[in-house]
Length: 143
Image 1 (cartoon, helix red, strand yellow):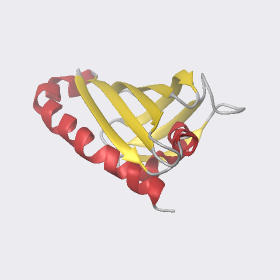
Image 2: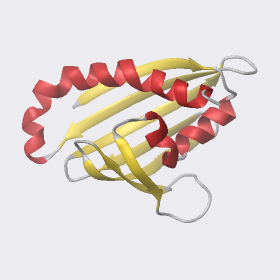
Image 3: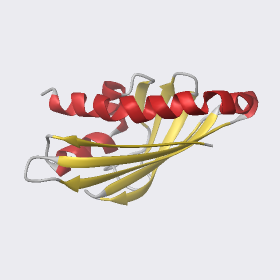
């Protein structure tokens, strides 16, 4: 199991940050490993909403919101033939215009890739912890 966690302050109101993160069609805007994100379930975004997207190294991934407390937290379960992940975001208002975002990721490789997990663990953990927060911040503060 690969575990990573990061925290960052974003200069946007908590509702804006929450709405951006929960809509995985925005993920390719801040996660260079993600592409082709499409929501495949009808209705408003919330508990049970499903997306399909492609990830470098993980292939075609189905992601589902499995935890929802607007605008405080959201969690996703993502699965492909190559990997399974649980991702949880927490959003705390820092002041009227700022939001503290905390993210925890648990990633398990499957199949033949599972054998490479010990070799990849440290590098993936460091990459997630160093890059994802600043990438999300840049995407949200760009406007």
